[in-house]
Length: 139
Image 1: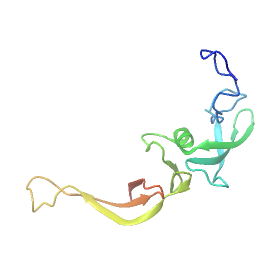
Image 2 (image 1 turned 90 degrees about the vertical axis):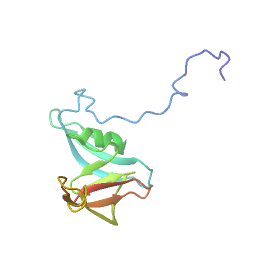
Image 3 (image 1 turned 60 degrees about the horizontal axis):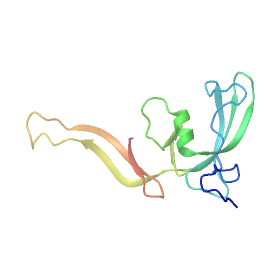
C-alpha cells in the first residue's frame, strides 16, 4: 500500500509493455524477416502472434504484437494506419477482412451531367472487418 500520493510507480504498478518488433541483440529492426503472422488463440481484438528472425545475428523472436505495430513495421509508402496488408489479405482486429457485397465502379460524375469533367472508372471492392471498419481497395 502506498502512503505517499506523490511516490513514483513501482514495477508492479506499471502497465505491461509488449515487446516491440526489433532485434534486441542488434538494437534495430532493419534486418528483420517476418517468418509468421497468425491469429491468437484465444482471440484478442487488435492483437496477433508474430514470429521473426534477424538476418544479421540470426536471433529468433516469437511474441504477441498489436496489428498496428506489425502494420507499421511492414508498411512501405502510404499504407492505411491500423490495417496490415499481408500478400492479398488485409488484416484489421487480428483477422483477415472479408469482402462485402458493395462494389464501387468509379469516382466522379457522368459526362452527361457536366461537360469538361470526366468519370474515372476504378473497379474496387469494399472489405469489412467484423468490428465495422471498412475500406475500398482496387479490385
